[in-house]
Structures are given as C-alpha cells and as structure tokens.
Image 1 (cartoon, rainbow, N blue to C red):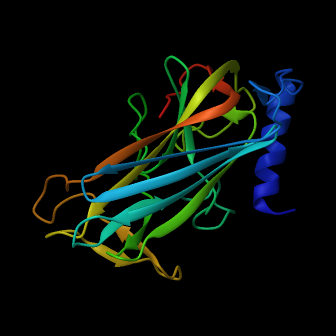
Image 2 (tube, rainbow, N blue to C red; image 1 turned 180 degrees about the vertical axis):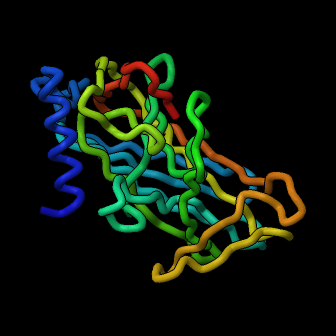
Length: 234
C-alpha cells in the first residue's frame, strides 16, 4: 500500500469513528454530478489562473503562475509529505483551514507557527522557480469530505470533528521575487526544487507575499472541522 493510500485509509477510519462516513461530500446545487469553475487574479509580481473541478468524491484545483515582472519568482508550493515515511514533498498536497462564514482556505505556503506549543524547526515548503515567460503549472488534489489540517497538529485517534459546508475555496499561494538577499539553494536530490531562507542574512524577514484566489464551488462542499482541544487552525 502506498503512503497516500495509508494516509487516506487512516483518514477514513477516523471519520468512521466519529460516525461521519455516511455524509455526502458534496450537496449538488444543480442537476450536474460534476462542476468546473475558473478564476484569476494579478497581484504584485504574479498572475494566477486556476480551475476548480469537483464531483462527489474529490476536488482538484489546477493553477498556473505567470511572472508579470522581470525578476524570477519562487513559489513555495512543494509541501512536505504527511509523515517521515512519505516522500520529501507531496505534489498533490495542500493544508486546509476553515474561514468564516462559508469558505475553506487551501494553503500552499508556510503554515503559521503554533501559539500554544513550542516547535524546534519551522515548517517551510520547498519552492519552484518561475522565470519570466515560463509559467509554472501545478495542481491540488483533495478527497471529500475535506478535513481541516495543520502540519504541526497531525491527526490523532482522539480527533474530534464538526461538520461545516463551504461555498468557496480560497487557493492561497506564497511566493517571493528573486531580489537581493534571497537565499535559494537547490534541494538535494529533488531537481527543480529550492530551499528558501525566511530571514535576511543580517536579520529580519524577507518580503514574502501571499495571493488568495477565490474559487466558487459548484456544489456545497462538506468540511470536517477539527474541534479537539488544543488544535490550531491554519
């Protein structure tokens, strides 16, 4: 069994324990079993175009990042795998968070540091370099129902869920232009990926940016919010 299948099997087992497996992942707003929506935005140095395709089993967000300026941009969208046994990065992964009143953030970027627990090493995704005139295309694959996630708080046997329904997904990407003092080192054994330092060599944070692209859902999407004590949403 592959690592993805193990994670999916564990996830279903946790949902079954809470008696939630019977829930439909999406409630159609119309007669179509599947839907497709598109959106785009230009912010700062990048233009992002995305497509959301959903059916009763999954959502797939395909996106393209195009540089609008003259300097290359590093997109921090190569997230680490869900366990030490998983690959160094998971090409279909994103972290999911609930947003009032009826949205879910799909994050490809650095998760916020926990407020109530100490961490030894911050989780910073690896980056793809996007050069002017060479758009970068990737995709996020999400099984339904969505499950709220945070890499600092992995799923446990005592996880507690509360069902919510969302009308839109917000694809959030983090990026930084190749400007002075940006340290981008090739990731060992991972061609095309770079490790990006968050701090300037002399101290202080580098000017990372985030863009949030809103994708309207063609059907209400079930989201299992994690409500166990101590969990912090992204």
